[in-house]
Image (cartoon, rainbow, N blue to C red; front, side):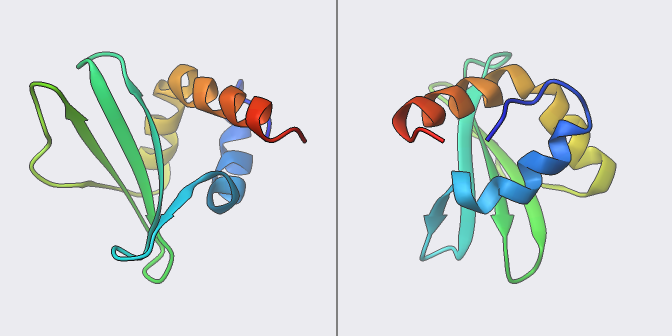
Length: 100
């Protein structure tokens, strides 16, 4: 998995999402956790395979979003692009743990 540099790289990230994410058997969703630098916590980006639905949820020491934020199309890509630095940090860690 390569890091996200350009907006076109987001499509590859989304295509590879299931292979680089963890799976929640109870919630029936794939999830990917990365730093929420602005609020000082973490974002969880989730994909519900059966519904084809993408959501995000933020949680930190002093906050927790009430609900998951549903993301579609351009919203999803913009969310990923704005957070690419922190997503890339996780991708780099995964590449070290599991060499390509």
